[in-house]
Image 1 (cartoon, rainbow, N blue to C red):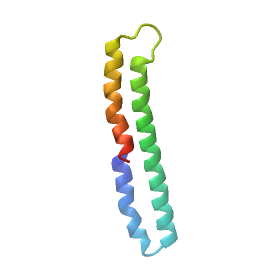
Image 2: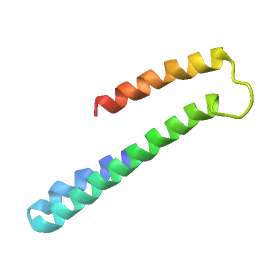
Image 3: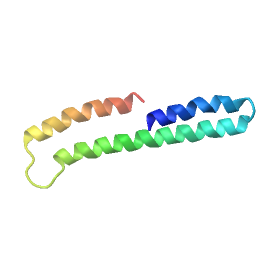
Length: 81
């Protein structure tokens, strides 16, 4: 997905000379697609983490510790955006 978006982005400036509005619309659409992709990716990561500790039944303290250590890098990625 990322490579496809990058490939499409390289085409946007080429349309800028002839069709300014169209180039701006294309850029806007690509930014929206990138945001959606990032949001979906991060949501999947969060769901995977939650599945590790949120399941019914007994969850060991070690499972919870591991989940917490995996949340940290995800949280840092969110703050860096």
